[in-house]
Image (cartoon, rainbow, N blue to C red):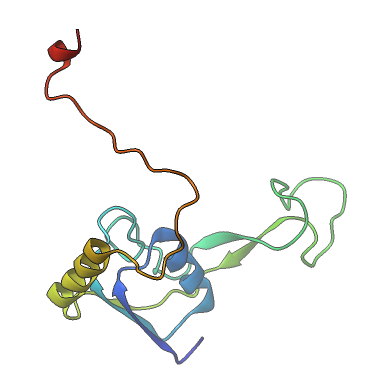
Length: 133
């Protein structure tokens, strides 16, 4: 992905930003911040280069690469340490438009979504707990 500019509506989440940091795009440009899960500075700076990251690469999860028994190189021993390339992140591109676009999407719902298989029962929340007693 070197040389590629990624443009997205909302700041990439922690997992997506970590994946992008391994791929090393030229830059990532986003509209609005992701205050709950943002990986480009709002919650964590996963876009920063140079820190080691564990990358699952086949094998069994939970194994570490150190300590006895010879595992050799390659990708068969679980998580392998790798250095994040990182990428420059540019926030705030038409952020008000990005927020409005996301709000409109979530308010209107998705008409192409499949019909739920289970019956959704509305939850009634009492105004005061004393009324239940």
